[in-house]
Length: 65
Image 1 (tube, rainbow, N blue to C red):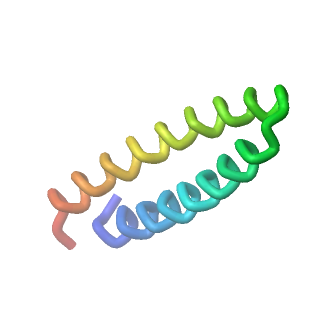
Image 2 (image 1 turned 135 degrees about the vertical axis):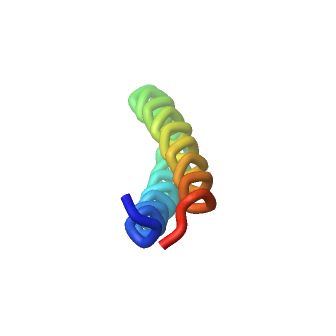
């Protein structure tokens, strides 16, 4: 991937992080048992997305167009 593709992917990941955080907040406010399961899934997804964003930041810093 070239630098511009990495940056585009990073923006996509950031947007997904924002959507996932909003959904997690909504699920937590519901407070039911199925919501707890969904909250755990969303927390795992957040962890994966944050790791990908970090990896992309490092790759972007190392890559020149």
